[in-house]
Image (cartoon, rainbow, N blue to C red):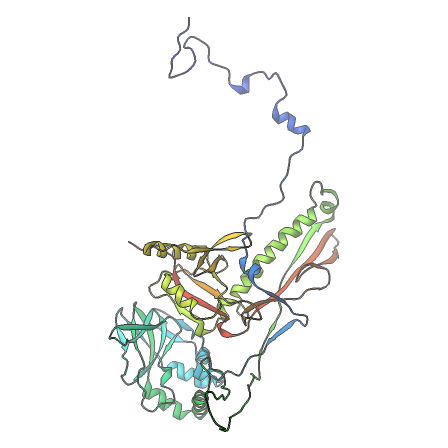
Length: 480
């Protein structure tokens, strides 16, 4: 009788079994059998395909003429954009002269020599966290451009508390409200929340320079005159109205003026040439058509690039073209419920948020710290996270900076709501999908079949508050 060791399994006096490779097979093996069998094949897979919620949620307008003109009411209050800087070492920070025209008071000014001399008068100054650079009610002695850092604008509240009225970051300006006033005073205090760099110019020196350049003086005088014209709360030319009157007073009249140079959006495009060898297209089509699979993956890649362009393109993309007045910075870095409420309050009928998946996770962490549970919204059968009933869609086309910060976009959509709309043209020759066609380009001398694949598209913001953005969204985890 053999003895079995429970630790080793087989009997100690029995020979060890032969390795599988050395045993004589008594039936046909799987490796040999596969020589006579076919495999069940999947379609070619692609990791880069995303949900592309922006393309799905935008209302698309069929632009038959290839150009979409956005007519607006005459705007008297000029918006602003960000001034840009160049750095040649740690202490040598200069403003790019031409970008000074992004300031409302200099919008449309074209004297490059004057702008270059004006930019040279700004001097870099480092500030420490907590330093107050302007105090409400004090005379304005300098004008500032923010090159780096985060600054808070605040005033005294009605009960003596500190009331934060805005956050400033790179490219913003401080002091422009003094233009056109004889003895300007700071309307609010400004404090550095982080260490940063400002470019400053003395106000008296700025006045002397303006007086010495007639073209600049005339430009600023015209700007100040426009700001004194009657306008509504959105900065549009006011229409005279009268309400609550009795008797037979003379009722004033007027008209609604339009912009004389409305913006026009031409359809942009993404193109590529798909190449397939005739031998492949002729012979290797069972069980799947090679040309169709190549075209399917090509179209997926084009649609991915299309969404990236709708977010980032300098001419029509959301991030570069959102109005300055619709940009708000996070108060402390991470995206808090307070920041999302601030972004939501800047427009009516916000339809959706767009955020990088990491930004959504960062927002949920802040909700968890406060014991809040974001809601959900059912969109096309999907449960999408939502805040105040507005769905937050993931969009990996929103960039993440080297400092590990990103942005969150809020959109109102549709022509009837004066929101954001996608632009394309249908019915184009050899159309494969709406706004996308595939055109046969012939066969070259090496027997390669070529197809030109083109998608035509653009995006328009009908009014400035159709979109807003929460900037400087910190993604990293913070210590508890």
